[in-house]
Image 1 (cartoon, rainbow, N blue to C red):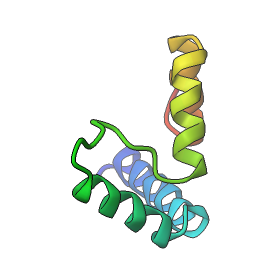
Image 2: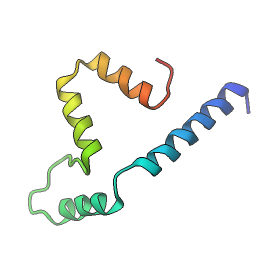
Image 3: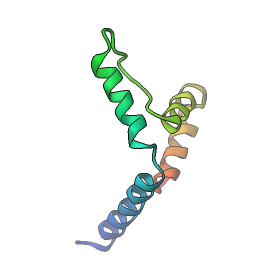
Image 4: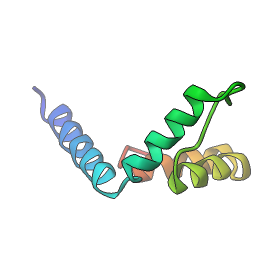
Length: 79
C-alpha cells in the first residue's frame, strides 16, 4: 500500500477511535432509533444526542464553505 494511503488509513483509524470514545451514549442513540421506528409519522432526519443537534444547527446557520472546512478539520482531512 502506498505511503499516502497508509497515512490516510492511520488518520481515519485515529478519528474513528476518538469518535467512539467521545461519542454519544449508545442508550441515547438507541432511544432515537426506537422512537423513529415506532413513531406513526417519523421524521426523515432525527438528531440523536447533543453533538448531532449542534451539527444540524450549524449546518443551517453557518455558510456552507465554513461548515465544510470545519467538518474537514474535525475529521483531519485535507482542507
